[in-house]
Image 1 (cartoon, rainbow, N blue to C red):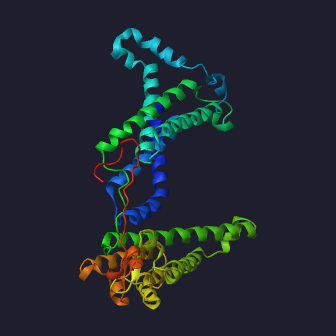
Image 2 (cartoon, rainbow, N blue to C red):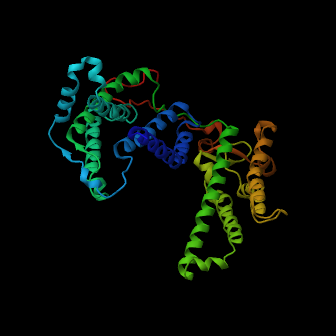
Image 3 (cartoon, one colour):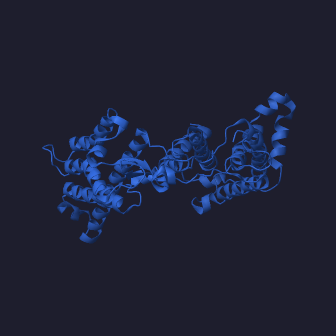
Length: 396
């Protein structure tokens, strides 16, 4: 496997991890800002994450194996400005333009420039960094990369495994400057990377409500697992080791913890939340309202709604069905909210059975905070130039 291919695979793996960690906050920000999912901001955010992971992978990975004699080929610091550039020029200048561009050392220099073009472009176009600061950011990042390489990842390895080259800093910084210069044309040709906020007063659609339920379910599973693991580790630590876990009824522990976590998150939290929202609803800017959708629902009705939606899940997890705890119960527990969601497709206004039985609807937090239509505040949207110097979106 080549160095570049291995680095690309590492970039994809890192990107997958970053995507998983950043998905929930990003999703919440999307709904909070736009009231819906926007494809273009999502694509730009994904590009930022993928580029950041690729930058780490291409400059640090793959990490070498520390074998005997590995330090006999010690990578060094190259501190003579333009030395490697001159060597690359000398190696390919006699072969014509095509030969020059295909020379490995010249390609290395060009790739160093190209690697930091997205950094300058995204810094200025996506985040509104001024041109000089975008170039300085490229300089700082490149210096940081070379320091990490030259110090063998701050001493993690016995010796450096890559050359720390001052010319890499120069070419990387040049790439960041080119990227910053391209931000102006990019802003004129591409949609704005972060459109202006939109008033979120319309009744939420079924996909958004489904996201809220899915996030609640995901949070229930994750927190239950974390608490159970903490209890098991604590038992092992205080009981004399792993053998202390032999007396723990794990299935029973999962049932108790799962019931407690479910009661807390979807039973107690909505009662104290201003918008009567579960954590999943709060993440996508929703709340539980009266049938008119403009005022928070009474707490009794909110509790009834949670009982209809999540009560059977707790019962199934506790072995209320003959199958008892196990994969069958897990399938049923996941399937129950899905059944309610499917039933919403055939009800008037896509209202869920939990909403009909409890006399509630799901509304946006902006709608709940705004009051009835006659009292709803005007949402002022201010356009802003993300990039100075003629890079504002002309369509806004």
